[in-house]
Length: 156
Image (cartoon, one colour):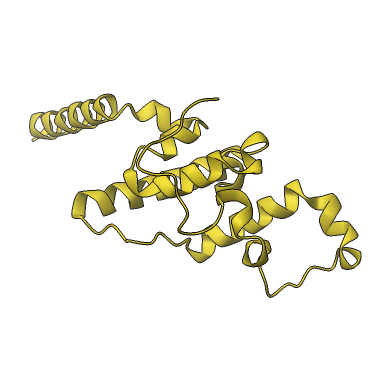
Protein backbone atom coordinates (compact mmCIF):
# COMPACT_ATOMS: atom_id res chain seq x y z
CA UNK A 1 0.00 0.00 0.00
CA UNK A 2 2.81 2.44 0.90
CA UNK A 3 4.50 1.69 -2.42
CA UNK A 4 1.31 2.52 -4.36
CA UNK A 5 0.87 5.80 -2.49
CA UNK A 6 4.53 6.66 -3.06
CA UNK A 7 4.28 5.91 -6.79
CA UNK A 8 1.06 7.96 -7.02
CA UNK A 9 2.63 10.95 -5.24
CA UNK A 10 5.75 10.70 -7.41
CA UNK A 11 3.59 10.57 -10.56
CA UNK A 12 1.68 13.67 -9.44
CA UNK A 13 4.92 15.52 -8.71
CA UNK A 14 6.32 14.60 -12.14
CA UNK A 15 3.12 15.65 -13.95
CA UNK A 16 2.88 18.93 -11.98
CA UNK A 17 6.57 19.65 -12.55
CA UNK A 18 6.27 18.95 -16.28
CA UNK A 19 3.21 21.20 -16.60
CA UNK A 20 4.98 23.98 -14.69
CA UNK A 21 8.06 23.66 -16.91
CA UNK A 22 6.11 23.51 -20.18
CA UNK A 23 3.90 26.47 -19.24
CA UNK A 24 6.92 28.56 -18.11
CA UNK A 25 5.14 28.87 -14.76
CA UNK A 26 7.67 31.21 -13.13
CA UNK A 27 6.93 34.01 -15.58
CA UNK A 28 3.45 34.28 -14.02
CA UNK A 29 4.99 35.07 -10.64
CA UNK A 30 6.45 38.34 -11.93
CA UNK A 31 5.02 41.69 -12.99
CA UNK A 32 5.64 41.75 -16.75
CA UNK A 33 2.44 42.98 -18.47
CA UNK A 34 3.16 40.94 -21.60
CA UNK A 35 2.60 37.85 -19.44
CA UNK A 36 -0.97 38.97 -18.81
CA UNK A 37 -1.35 39.28 -22.56
CA UNK A 38 -0.38 35.65 -23.28
CA UNK A 39 -4.06 34.96 -23.93
CA UNK A 40 -5.55 36.62 -27.01
CA UNK A 41 -8.67 37.65 -25.09
CA UNK A 42 -6.49 40.16 -23.23
CA UNK A 43 -5.23 41.86 -26.41
CA UNK A 44 -7.59 44.83 -26.25
CA UNK A 45 -6.98 45.40 -22.52
CA UNK A 46 -3.21 45.14 -23.02
CA UNK A 47 -3.18 47.44 -26.05
CA UNK A 48 -5.40 49.95 -24.26
CA UNK A 49 -3.03 49.96 -21.27
CA UNK A 50 0.06 50.06 -23.52
CA UNK A 51 -1.12 53.26 -25.19
CA UNK A 52 -2.48 54.87 -22.02
CA UNK A 53 -0.75 57.25 -19.62
CA UNK A 54 -0.89 54.59 -16.89
CA UNK A 55 1.78 52.61 -18.72
CA UNK A 56 4.35 55.05 -17.37
CA UNK A 57 3.33 54.45 -13.76
CA UNK A 58 1.60 51.10 -13.32
CA UNK A 59 1.57 47.57 -14.63
CA UNK A 60 -1.27 45.04 -14.43
CA UNK A 61 -0.43 43.87 -10.91
CA UNK A 62 -0.22 47.43 -9.57
CA UNK A 63 -3.95 47.77 -10.18
CA UNK A 64 -5.34 44.24 -10.23
CA UNK A 65 -3.64 42.58 -7.23
CA UNK A 66 -3.13 43.53 -3.58
CA UNK A 67 0.28 44.94 -2.75
CA UNK A 68 0.98 42.81 0.31
CA UNK A 69 3.08 39.79 -0.67
CA UNK A 70 0.90 36.90 0.49
CA UNK A 71 -2.50 38.34 -0.57
CA UNK A 72 -0.96 39.24 -3.96
CA UNK A 73 0.03 35.64 -4.66
CA UNK A 74 -3.24 34.25 -3.31
CA UNK A 75 -5.12 36.48 -5.79
CA UNK A 76 -2.71 35.55 -8.59
CA UNK A 77 -3.23 31.84 -7.83
CA UNK A 78 -7.03 32.22 -7.76
CA UNK A 79 -7.04 34.18 -11.01
CA UNK A 80 -4.62 31.74 -12.63
CA UNK A 81 -6.82 28.80 -11.65
CA UNK A 82 -9.89 30.57 -13.05
CA UNK A 83 -8.09 31.41 -16.30
CA UNK A 84 -6.69 27.91 -16.81
CA UNK A 85 -10.09 26.38 -16.03
CA UNK A 86 -11.85 28.69 -18.49
CA UNK A 87 -9.42 27.97 -21.30
CA UNK A 88 -9.24 24.24 -20.62
CA UNK A 89 -13.02 23.85 -20.48
CA UNK A 90 -13.69 26.36 -23.26
CA UNK A 91 -15.78 28.68 -21.07
CA UNK A 92 -14.13 31.86 -22.29
CA UNK A 93 -16.40 34.89 -21.94
CA UNK A 94 -16.61 37.20 -24.93
CA UNK A 95 -16.40 40.18 -22.58
CA UNK A 96 -14.24 39.83 -19.51
CA UNK A 97 -15.70 41.54 -16.46
CA UNK A 98 -14.10 41.90 -13.06
CA UNK A 99 -15.63 40.06 -10.11
CA UNK A 100 -16.68 42.07 -7.07
CA UNK A 101 -13.51 41.07 -5.19
CA UNK A 102 -11.39 42.33 -8.09
CA UNK A 103 -13.33 45.59 -8.21
CA UNK A 104 -12.57 46.13 -4.53
CA UNK A 105 -8.84 45.47 -5.10
CA UNK A 106 -8.75 47.91 -8.03
CA UNK A 107 -10.58 50.54 -5.97
CA UNK A 108 -8.11 50.16 -3.08
CA UNK A 109 -5.21 50.55 -5.51
CA UNK A 110 -6.75 53.62 -7.17
CA UNK A 111 -7.07 55.28 -3.78
CA UNK A 112 -3.59 54.12 -2.70
CA UNK A 113 -1.89 55.67 -5.74
CA UNK A 114 -4.07 58.77 -5.91
CA UNK A 115 -4.48 59.46 -2.20
CA UNK A 116 -3.50 63.14 -2.55
CA UNK A 117 -6.21 63.68 -5.14
CA UNK A 118 -8.75 61.72 -3.13
CA UNK A 119 -7.93 63.77 -0.03
CA UNK A 120 -8.40 67.03 -1.92
CA UNK A 121 -11.75 66.04 -3.46
CA UNK A 122 -14.70 66.66 -1.14
CA UNK A 123 -12.43 66.79 1.91
CA UNK A 124 -11.43 63.18 1.34
CA UNK A 125 -15.01 61.92 1.47
CA UNK A 126 -15.46 59.70 -1.53
CA UNK A 127 -18.86 58.58 -2.73
CA UNK A 128 -18.74 55.22 -0.98
CA UNK A 129 -21.31 53.69 -3.28
CA UNK A 130 -19.24 54.15 -6.44
CA UNK A 131 -15.89 52.95 -7.65
CA UNK A 132 -13.32 55.35 -9.09
CA UNK A 133 -13.33 53.45 -12.39
CA UNK A 134 -17.05 53.94 -12.87
CA UNK A 135 -16.30 57.50 -13.94
CA UNK A 136 -12.66 57.02 -14.94
CA UNK A 137 -13.05 53.72 -16.82
CA UNK A 138 -11.09 54.78 -19.90
CA UNK A 139 -8.02 55.94 -17.99
CA UNK A 140 -6.04 52.71 -17.56
CA UNK A 141 -7.19 50.71 -20.59
CA UNK A 142 -8.37 53.34 -23.05
CA UNK A 143 -11.79 53.50 -24.61
CA UNK A 144 -13.82 50.31 -24.65
CA UNK A 145 -14.07 48.64 -28.00
CA UNK A 146 -11.13 50.60 -29.41
CA UNK A 147 -8.15 48.42 -30.19
CA UNK A 148 -5.21 48.49 -32.53
CA UNK A 149 -5.46 44.76 -33.14
CA UNK A 150 -4.44 42.44 -34.71
CA UNK A 151 -0.86 43.22 -33.70
CA UNK A 152 0.65 43.52 -30.27
CA UNK A 153 3.00 46.46 -29.78
CA UNK A 154 5.86 45.38 -27.50
CA UNK A 155 8.18 48.30 -28.16
CA UNK A 156 9.27 50.33 -25.17
